[in-house]
Length: 410
Image (tube, rainbow, N blue to C red; front, side):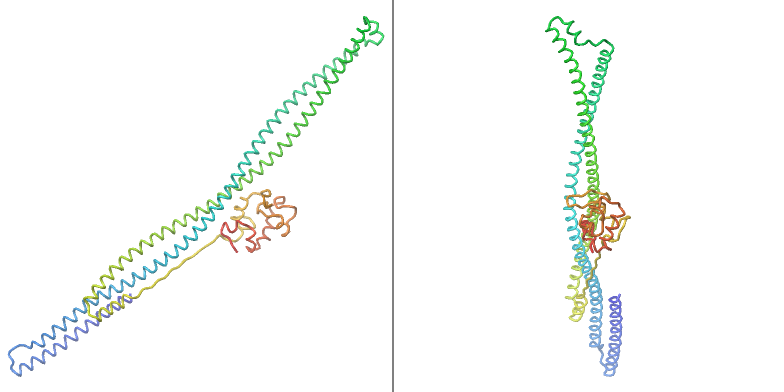
């Protein structure tokens, strides 16, 4: 607007100058005419006409050449200012894209680590489930064997009872009867041996059956205990697998968000570069026109055009943001950290000893007033109270590795 006003002012001054020159030349022409009339010169005042034509042509030429040059100078300054703004914007976008690339690279490493842990835990979960199935099969077989032994024991006891009843119901031969009824000493020995062997065999059968039943019962009990242990370990492993899946999903979501932001800023950078290219083309065209006008203009007009075309300005800006450091989601610390650390699960201790919803190691747990040997053995309310003291309004954010992963620093 200021350049346009300046151009209008120049035009007005040129018009006034032209009018003034016209008046002067007219007055000079009249004086020359009167002088020639007094001297009775028959030819017209040629010097006056020539002077008038030269001055008028000079003024018109200056007016014609100066106004386009001023207009192009104003356009060139605007174009250069726009180009400088685009270049500053490109520098800001390039820096932001570089930071996003670094963040995505770090997330890639973290995602790889979490996925490796998840694969290990899933493999362990599959192994424990297979072990649980095997123990279940063994337990079923032992219980079936126990039923068979119980039936055998019942049959042996039934047979023994029948023999005992038969012995009580019939007259039991005494030693004298056996001796007298025997046909010789050898027959006597055979009968006595048979009676002893039968009784011993029955007693041995009962003893073996009872022992086998006891062993089967002990085996069944041991397998039941082993099955409970395997079931507990399988449950804990499944909890860890779910937690790792939650961490993996969180990291994937954050990486996707960063990738979208990078794509948007890359598109903006490409658009800005295209705009800069168009501006450079327009600037080149304007500068070429200026150079052509400068060659045709007078020295003063060329100097004014060069001065008007010399101004340029630049500017830029930027911004940033981060994840809120305030507790959220009903947790004592930001929910994003909890989801990253434990997936919102009360996890048993990991290899570093960290456990519970907030993944607190035993030394820190005791230092901040936690009861018991580990966090996961206490209630959620106690874990939240200890975590709140550790967090301390964000001053203790460094106690959680995931704080830097989700973009929370203090």
